[in-house]
Length: 379
Ligand SMILES: Cc1cc2nc3c(=O)[nH]c(=O)nc-3n(C[C@H](O)[C@H](O)[C@H](O)COP(=O)(O)OP(=O)(O)OC[C@H]3O[C@@H](n4cnc5c(N)ncnc54)[C@H](O)[C@@H]3O)c2cc1C
Image 1 (tube, rainbow, N blue to C red):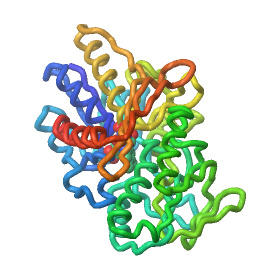
Image 2 (tube, helix red, strand yellow; image 1 turned 120 degrees about the vertical axis):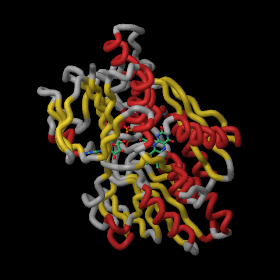
Image 3 (spheres, protein in one colour; image 1 turned 135 degrees about the horizontal axis):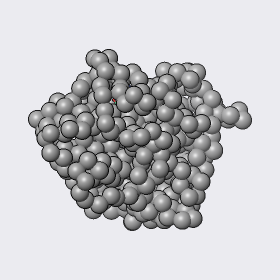
């Protein structure tokens, strides 16, 4: 009997555990550990901030996994011991034969002076605060600020700005509002190349949203946002993406490299430790272009399927091994009932080959359908 332990019940973890459960006989045990009790479908946070979703509609209880034959442990993971193949948690020690780490990226707010003046819409609580602030907003200056790279979902800050624009237009106060994006990036979604980046930039400009690239955030005290070099912007409302880092447990366990993330083989998602795989946002996955694979659920999902397939093939000694091929896609929600759709091969050489389909209603409904499918498929 093999015991496979999956760390994290987010995008990668839930897919990996479910795929393993479906592929392996019940004599093998699949365990999933997460400190949270609910799985959150993060892409819908963007609809939540403009009051188009309710929190309970975009979350699922991880206890449902128990009914599918996956043992879900609600605990804080405190240490990974790859040499003796155990994991320490707040509820005890767990042994593994195979370990899949999908612990994601965490945000760290208090490294920026005045961080309390910004609303972190990358979590449920912050998204709800932003929704309430937007509801009572009467006009003024709104800043969407990306503190640093890398950050999850390279499209999300741009989607947030476009959705806020559409929401305020509907409310009839767009004319009284200035919306500005500040980011350290050179272009939106730079890993996807300059054609896509410039298209998104033009889309923003058409909607009267100013795009301010190469701005390194220093502080936001009293809603006065300061950037390296001395530039300032006094905002009435700040929606921000705080700096990201890997969870302390993987750094303390010596699993990360100089990037602060877990290095992996980009095709097999194997780490340097025997039987230990890492997938999703927690990985440092260098592309042929020298840039890193973006942190997005679509990659966590694809990598989870590959890892689950390969572990099951190794245990059952049947089936073919697979490799993750770098394919990815993303809906770019724009409000007004329309969205764009970017897709391509991020492992292409010498650089990713990604294109953006013309925005339209079809892609918006595609994203809605994907949300429904995700919450049905895995829960
Ligand atoms: C606003 C927003 C919109 C997004 N939109 C999209 C999109 O449209 N498309 C897309 O592809 N991606 C999108 N993403 C990105 C996507 O959410 C992430 O890339 C994806 O969730 C990564 O999956 P993961 O399994 O690596 O980590 P996560 O899904 O973050 O899961 C990590 C899990 O580990 C748990 N955990 C962490 N540390 C511990 C610990 N010490 N002990 C116990 N449990 C722990 C956490 O509770 C969490 O449940 C979006 C993200 C945001 C914030």
